[in-house]
Image (cartoon, rainbow, N blue to C red; front, side, top):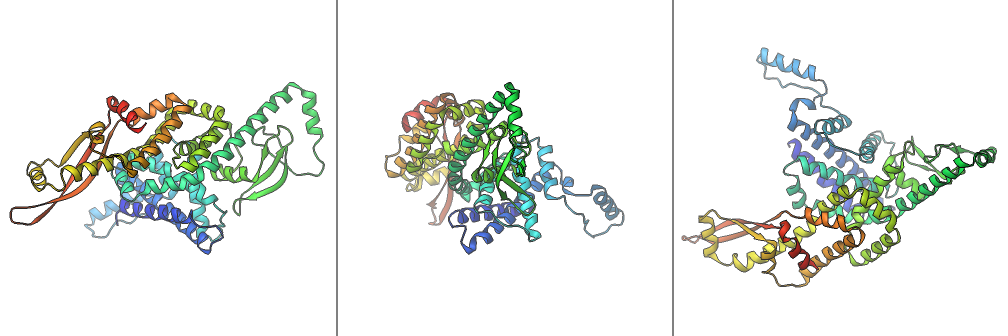
Length: 464
């Protein structure tokens, strides 16, 4: 099996297993076994697909010792040997670092930490030292996958088709919907605590006497740890959260700045950063951003009411994050929103095809003779051929929920999102005709439904 096919096969297995495990309780006997499968398959797919990306740029860069490889290659040529050149390929993290460098990919610390965590988890499995924390492994993998998909979608030409054919995007959405909402609640609450702690630090800095009193009041014989916010050794420990055999994160409250770290906070920070060291507020905003785009796209009615209420309650900080990260958030939303639009366009194309082409043998045959199997329609033209029924009403309702939410939160981001939706949506529809000698000839029509900037108002009216 080739590098690409091998990597995609393992990725598909990892996503399917992740979807399955998200539906079962962590007390199930299958739970830990399935998580091990997910880690092994995702690690293998990531290493293989990143090596494929390296191979595209230069097949030689995947080898660990280039000098050895070149030397063996020369010896083979000189000696006219049929013996294959043997050389070890680079390790997992080397492949990651190489792709990031040669493709000049902008990455965030959070993403890189999750890659490191995946590699450490895989290595721990090899040495039989890994124990799973309920739902934590699912969490970081579900957040890692969309970032990997962005890289694959951008640099592997066939990836989007593969992902759509195997419903990988849809599966990830269902998994992330369960994670995003709870994660958003926790990170928002933690950022508020962080901001309060920073405000307390300003007050203490203005009152040196009070500052000294805080340090003098430390409990004798008590264990204190370094606070990630104020960097003072003043977090009074109430418990610890063991992440693996080597790492543990503490739970407690800083007696200097007042930052409190709960068990939920520790679990989320472990999934995002592995440790508390070198965490800055901007890093917390990046975590919030990653959860936010998923919640903004929540469209199930019962979940939407809860999300809308939560956003309204925290509109100040959410609006601030969106305004500072509009381009990134809109880009992330666009990638996921387009699949909702694609559902409508595909259904429109199917209805148009069945109504105007499929049952007309002469049209199909003539299209084949003219080598004209591509049907180009504007969104408005395609919409004129449909009759609204439950299928369309459900799809339209999903888009309406999202667009109304975005308009209410940040109108500029809403406009940016609509502009990014201006593209051509493709769908493929099999047909056939009977030839003059009564043989069945199978064909495939490609529908191109184009949404341009000029069509946007029509789209808005159609979905409003």
